[in-house]
Image (cartoon, rainbow, N blue to C red; front, side):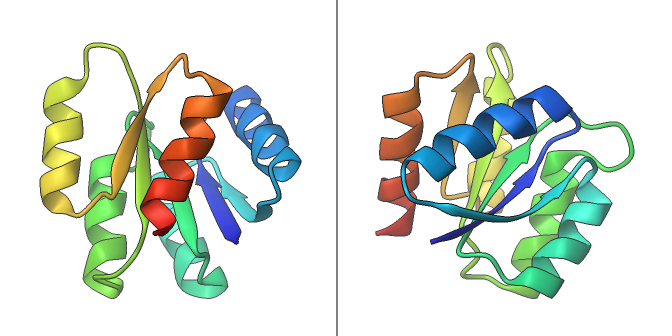
Length: 118
């Protein structure tokens, strides 16, 4: 399964990548901004996307909406900090397949991925 990681934190992208690769996923792209992430989604056509909610240029909710408008079957998992429940709810309504709350547990991350892929 191929993954695109969209997060403005280089550390978070690296941490997600390491965990996902260890569990057999192939990370085919990364982006540090929602707009770049949308472009990479269209170019790379990953099986699943992790999308940070809070980013500077284009936030995750706006990027999610653009990805969903391009492909209504897109599998996007939102990554949020505690206290962003309203944004997460809006993301689910907009088409996100699930969410991961930071800081996250590795086993929960992988089970959320597997659930979104089924």
